[in-house]
Length: 324
Image 1 (cartoon, rainbow, N blue to C red):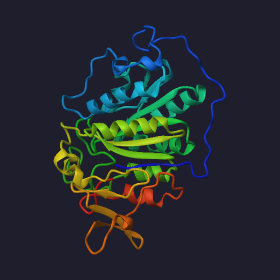
Image 2 (cartoon, rainbow, N blue to C red; image 1 turned 60 degrees about the vertical axis):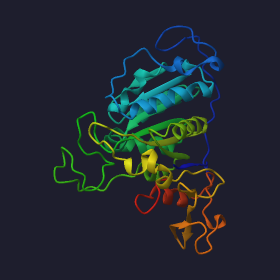
Image 3 (cartoon, helix red, strand yellow; image 1 turned 90 degrees about the horizontal axis):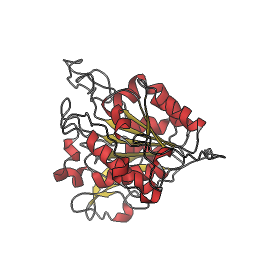
Image 4 (tube, rainbow, N blue to C red; image 1 turned 45 degrees about the vertical axis):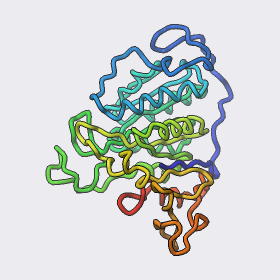
């Protein structure tokens, strides 16, 4: 999946003060161990997880809890902010500070927290409905301000909390409880919107691709400036299998394009397919056919100032292209 970062001509704010704290765990009240000694278990709260069995949110939560100790940040300097939706119960399950805010306004709350205390590691957890419907304006402005905030969007292409209505990312023609004859709206592309809003880091992953998702979350956390991560998340109750065409392990290598800085865009079980430019358009080619070699392929560069390639990658879709 895709990862792109770069500051272009933009500048980042640099906190001129710190906010050392003597408080312990935000949830347990116990004195926290030094950051270097923290483990995943230290970030697991005592709250019962109330997602449906089999929900993709579990995998994302598990990954974030595993990444947190690697960052070396004390728990009392980490804040998770959410809006409204299934994903928005996330702060309850993290043994850090958290704020379950109101519909669509998590970015505004997170902005206030970061401005009041720049030393904090601030995370926004949201869904496709929360972020891109009622929260669309806050989404855009939070990204363009480029504060050092990490923004994770769980995209399941459905409203799960309200029991199965179409969302801003639902496919055209999708039949749901609120669109019995199919949607008439074209879906929002979250990555395209983030790039257009001048995000300095964008990435995409899949809930069940544990290794890749963990690396993306860690890279986002280490980026200075706004980081936006879209995660394809399966809702096994109201939109089961929405991403099976490329997310299932049996087909993933042939239908997902994993991007690495400085490396050619190659995919496929046999690593023999790639992406090259044909004039102004990308195309899928087979290495070894018609004289095609790796040197003909596009090379991923996360520091490009021009967003054109990032836009192109964000808009690649099945079945014509692998999913970046």
